[in-house]
Image (tube, rainbow, N blue to C red):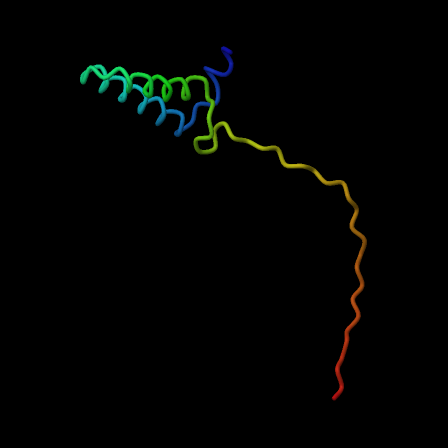
Length: 81
């Protein structure tokens, strides 16, 4: 858990953290408890680096193919009319 929180910080993760804190601050100023939940969600996404936001959390590994391709020979077809 400690490694997830303190490693791999990038631009999009800082954006999510800033948005989360700004939403929480605005929700407290307006006394709106619903937006505190949304701000907490954005902040948690940034802290724990989950969600598919940019290139951060959604990595699908590429399947390596070990199929051997043989040389394909082509034949030229000429139409003599």
